[in-house]
Image (cartoon, rainbow, N blue to C red; front, side, top):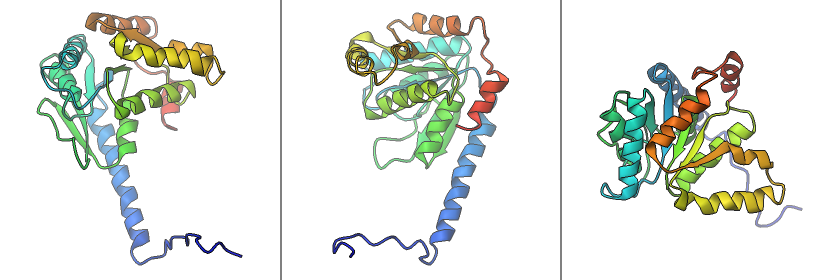
Length: 239
């Protein structure tokens, strides 16, 4: 006997449903194709994340701009979400530096509007296509203070590296006072209760100064070079 409150299955044979799904798949494919074509030559690149809600006179904004400028002058393209707050700071720092400022813009009900400091600007409708693009072209992740979106990008990168779905890369948390509690919780709860291995803590670094961020990325790639190996490139095809 079926439950009286059981929700009936959705009828995917509704008129027009299959056609809409098919066109949606083409839209997703077009976003991946455009990203591959327009970002294929920007490497090495650093994906940067932080709150969209900080004003331009906030210390976090100024710190973000300084880091992005130093990365850009050192030869790294800077990839951000393309919106306001620290995304604008990242793009602004790179825009006035020597390397491209890239914005991966997303259509949202609120908050998101493109900033004016983008040498390369892409627009996404699908969140996961945008998230893949952040990872696919990144040589490093630099993460400043932020909210749920910032934490989402951080934890996704850690998960993908831990699961060997992308190559290992520097994942740098900037501004120790903001991140220390989270990192301590990782160690005191996740490691202590065997939810992650103790060695997984080596996947993140806490750094405070812009020059130290740049140096940490160069130090990591000093002996192996920035280009992914053939095996690492193959792994990205299954991302």
